[in-house]
Length: 488
Ligand SMILES: Cc1cc2nc3c(=O)[nH]c(=O)nc-3n(C[C@H](O)[C@H](O)[C@H](O)COP(=O)(O)OP(=O)(O)OC[C@H]3O[C@@H](n4cnc5c(N)ncnc54)[C@H](O)[C@@H]3O)c2cc1C
View 1 (cartoon, rainbow, N blue to C red):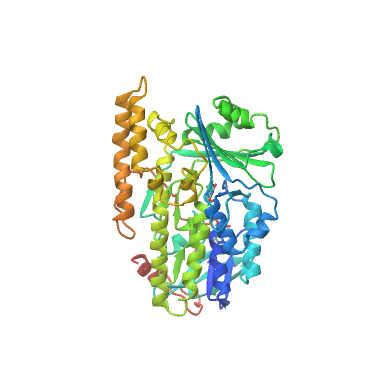
View 2: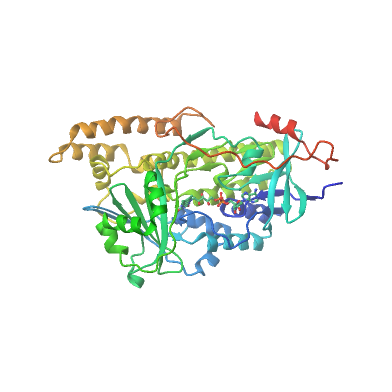
């Protein structure tokens, strides 16, 4: 019995942010690209899906923005933060002429991404499951797929795993276990509602902080629909699941400003939640393969940057491969450079996510540092989400010193508690800078922002391998090549 083999230049597993963004530059360069996804679009996925201008520009680069805007979304030009007496409101720094954030439900957004990739010339196959990577002489040369009762292989110069956090491709290339990671202490509980302010709703992504809650009010799509997300102590997520409405109401009760903003909403969707959000870096390139998007790197969604990074580094992967596919050595070097560039670009935000995902109330020190951003609507604090500069340049040493001085001088200040907090924060400030500036590619040196106890769960179980006695298809490598690859 022989296996049917198809040829392409690149095969991409996963057809959402990273997979479609990688496909487009490759097909624009004239390559044959097959993208496979086990899902059928439109299809939802667990995400709160904010894209700030730096991410929206990726939709523009891809050619997806006109279709996205045709869905009639709200455009948010401001970021505002409410924390007790503290109010910050800033405009976003524009990118490529785009000065607004979007928040498109994933079923709608990802269907547009698939349409855009198809229109560019990629072949996108839905309801197609990839079970295995095919190897030859230690090099990934394709994937084995299943669609209904049909099994076949697609062989290509490059295999891209854009298959999300539970990436089968990561397991197949022996990159499943991250080489650095951090446990998250916050969980997400969210639902959609009709905005009670209707057309008068502010064109802003709003953050309402109170106690351990950080609640986002995100104008969504179509305009007038709003996504409300509580990023709260992960330990409380089981309570939200048990009694969603009662816990939603308690969240409103302990946050008067939030209650005034959305408490009157009546049309509420089902509550969705997660407390499984460890952040990580996996080895993301090797001979003939790359892991794009969440498959290779995930950071806490409190940063609102996962899709931006999946889109941007999907695109950059496609661009890097487009000119190097014909020579394996050159391709592999380009993939490694791409991975290094992704890490350099994401490290600050990864550490920021690790710090922000610690549960707990806003301390006097943090409040005073936040207060240094009050006044004027020029972009500043919003540059963190918007990736204008590294987070530690936005929340800079001079702001930390100013905030510290004000917190210590405040009437009734608990100076011991403030200095204790400083003793925890200072090593983080130092080690995240060391990591960004000094530690090398795929460094495993621990950093003070990273918390132990992380988990990415077990790798997706590989299907039973082709029996050794079965006639092998042309160009398979098998277990030996796989093991060789593990050392890369
Ligand atoms: C609770 C939560 C909130 C978030 N909020 C935000 C936010 O506000 N802003 C933001 O930018 N990011 C956010 N993120 C992160 C964001 O969702 C991800 O970074 C983004 O979805 C990654 O895109 P991706 O293309 O890498 O993978 P995914 O979106 O996970 O897509 C992977 C695709 O691969 C397919 N697939 C998987 N295995 C196989 C297989 N074996 N064969 C075939 N197909 C396969 C799946 O069907 C899926 O379609 C959030 C994440 C979570 C969990």
